[in-house]
Length: 187
Image (tube, rainbow, N blue to C red; front, side, top):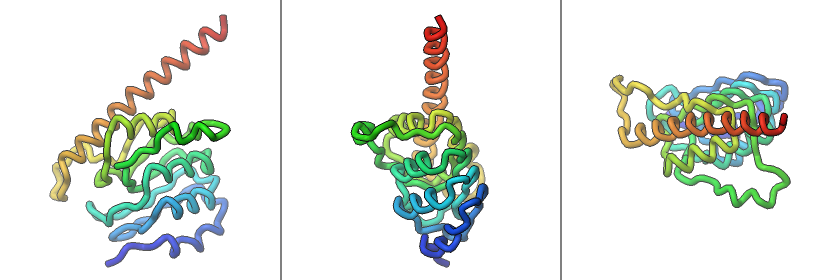
């Protein structure tokens, strides 16, 4: 068995009006940040994108959190994304000070495919995700009840659980901030 490379997906990039794409391969896909950016640019109307493996442990992901910025920029209607990520390194917000505006997408509410994804600091991951995707409330790929027979890493599971809990807390704080800002603006 082998992983599918991004070059094999490129013929699909001509289908610019796709709104739903579900791709699974036994071992997974060999995608990096550049190929994820190509996906995002190719499908600007996408609302649901799922790329993954049907195995509990596919190949390690070369796609990092930085690739999510492309989906924020080029896919304004994306509501659900399943994409294994390497979340050990979090882009620092200071890197975006030179940009005209903060990269942000307000449609994404669910990010999945993360149960076997490496993660560094769950606090930084949650803060980054909340900043770029303020409506994101679920890290749906985090295995909630790891009682099946598939091997799993309990420490990894706990880190993603922490990130998901923090994400919900940050979402609530942003809602409260918006409420008070709107109330103050109306007076």
